[in-house]
Length: 493
Image (tube, rainbow, N blue to C red):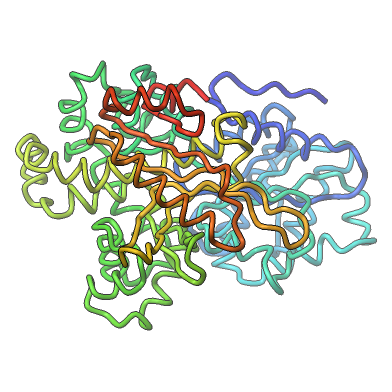
């Protein structure tokens, strides 16, 4: 069965193809799939359109008692099957069997959206589904329902198939719906200027709903409109985007002590990426941070990135750009913003935005480019991962902070892992030959380090402000020097 992606779904070709493959599998036997992702990423649109295109069943759960949820589900089943009235469901066992019965005649998707609402009110529901999908059980064997459970509570959804969870081993699809990458986000916002696209991405990231529902399709008309757009669309109390960063924490049921979580996020936004730095910023012991850091990671709001150059060391970064913008620009001036003094706040905050929001976002864009868009010839191979790293220079007893450390795939056996590139990334500073010399020194140190093959590592310099003429001349003569500007990030490889 061929199901064309509806025109109203932007991008998401991979996600749509995976859902179609799962939903149209014509083998006998009901199967289970799990779809997860933070709110506002378009999961509901994907699943609703899938169900509509395939003639399947879609049910959106709400926060309700089990009795009310069963009644609503029975009403939806009655409408779907053309029954004279609601289907009477006495419990969740009968409800799940009724969902499996939808696939007796043919394969079709059966979507339960916002599944965590149901499972939190009825704790045994995952076990009920596990039992319903028991191999050899007639209700499963005689069905070709493709049951899709979807949810936005990442910590809950991640636990559905983990460890000793009842549904572990039952799912044939586990599909995350992530934010759009920076290139897709620029196309979605209709922004063709690379520098403007980077500045907008640093605030709203790749969440599709932030353009549609949250600012009513208000996109900057050009570079000269950026400041006015920030004031009217982001710092405007009348726009839903204004309070969105706060709601991202408030709506996750696992984030109970929001004051602590806001403080942790504020610490990271201020550049305190280590556990010790976070503890010092918020006035807690490092040992007291295990729980809030784990919860924020599970909720998809924090990402812990191991330092590839220092074993056992890692740094945290905020996964959602809007939260970084809120913590850096909005939270310190919240009262003034509520009083509609957004223009004054933005004028005073431009330096904080550039250093605390745009700079780190530009670094992350360059890392994404290295992994997803850079040609193998550019870096001398395909980058498997890219992150920042800290290298100690024993001669000067100083630390060299590298904004980009791009590694290739680990080789078979015990051979050294290829280091493809080390990089310096700066948004607002023109890079020159001294920056190149610093990277060359770092590469020399890494060549002597066991476990890494740094002999062919490229020296990558990325800047939003450009490069000196001297550096450009050197880059023309040396194939190991890679210069990256916003235009190359958005259109080149």
